[in-house]
Length: 508
Image 1: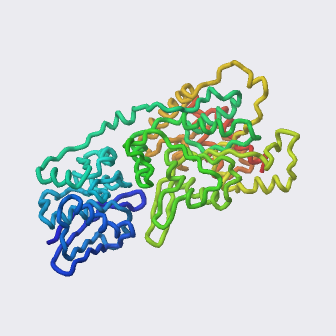
Image 2 (image 1 turned 135 degrees about the vertical axis):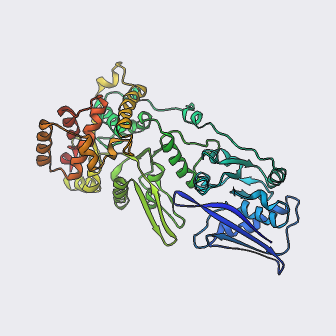
């Protein structure tokens, strides 16, 4: 007897439908799985056989062949356990074939017949919905994640016994989630507050601009000046996620296996801070079965690189293309995988190996050592960073001052006001932030007057700015104007944007 069960798999960040064909016929007892399965899929036969036996059913001692179609794509992971088991149960006449029609089955089986959660449920069900499917059976721990796909009726199951009972008795029940409630649910957790930071008003201003326009930023200064402390507070002033952004992040974390089963939807912008010993593959993504790297896990959030020159140079250079394209393509023998990587790059660094060059007479580094240290950051990478902010020493009077510093809540309110202007302005442009403006959009939305053009030309010639830096200055000026609630870019906005491009001339 032949049974066909619908399931799904992952390619990059997208899902696709896999048809699991199960044939149980007379012949020498065997259990074969074909269709380019990896080791985890091949091991499904042992899990399925034992799970069915422990469900108090007699496993057929026959010739069993399972085909995973399309057969020319690599199948990975244990998520085919459930559809294979369902197909065998249909062939055993335990489940009627008509009740599984137009239902997608995904899940891993334990040896006692219980269902375990799997990765990648959200993109798989999204692909199923686009292909006309309306129902899905998932492990109970994945049911809320699957229910995020509008239009899909998801039933969460705990065991094979429960599945057989529900399907045969037509007792379909659906898992419901309130997406608005998930987005508005502010879980109680500690957020570092900018009110804790004494002084450094210039750096706070630079971080506010970075958050408002999603601009890349690097902080340069001596050790102990608060660079890391302030960068870790950046996520607290970022604008709230839209539903589309939240679903994109959730898909990535689901594929990577980092999604908390108790939290179906990621509602906070990611803040990723890899150690400087991180390899190139861990930053960009890759592996035998390619997985998202740190730049994709930071999608729509912050990628913070502390002690920037300590990272391997070839690892830093691989960031150049994702910073421009906002996606990364990983080519492997098994196929080409593309992951989104629109992130705000925040970096911090010292001006020299000892950290005191330019700010103290205590620096004992030679010019050769300083040049080698700064040379780890290439010109093309630095050119892609919108804001270069200097973080000087904080003097004693500021540390002892009782004057209140602006709190994260106050700064975030200013950021949100600027972001709302951008969303209204670009509602028909498929972009959300000023940093996403292309050349054509810059000509339309970043108009400057005659005085501004003269200033920009003077800066372009004297500072030796590249065409990329020219456009970044205009995008930055647009964000500064938005923070001031100004529809026009004034000379003072442009002047502030230009001064954020000066540190590479000072140190490099």
